[in-house]
Length: 192
Image 1 (cartoon, helix red, strand yellow):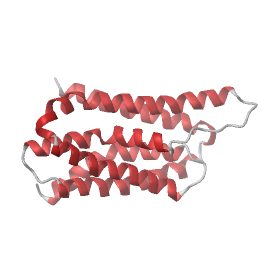
Image 2: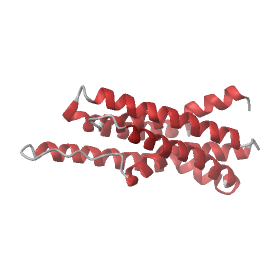
Image 3: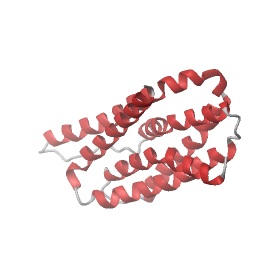
Image 4: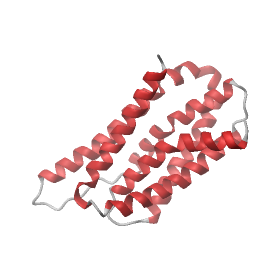
């Protein structure tokens, strides 16, 4: 596998994490670099870890991973995005009370989002095991590219989030749910 192919693979795997990071940034009113680094660390870390796991267990679990990865990603993303939407509409109904939006930057939410966006990396790792390709360089590239794009995504989302203020949590939730549907539809279409 050439360096160019590895970088294309890394960017391709990181796109969902970037989009989710932008959505997470949209939920914040003020730019907090620790949140950008947190998203980068979670998403990038999972993008290193999951291909390694996929590669190690590729021969044993290949059919399970390839047949159900899209469903797992879909369920996790719809759950987190749906939770953000629920909280946004719940807070909108409580117009007399102070609005406290749900933060995507909790340990539980970051783990769920990182897991959901790295399921494809797990399948990539399993695929590389099937063609007997070394996994270390691709896994590191996936992690580093995802880290950088996720940090940038949170910053971009936070900066543009100020343009929309109150309704931005709805946009973030919709985007996360949309990504879940996109993953599901792409996999269902390619199965035919």
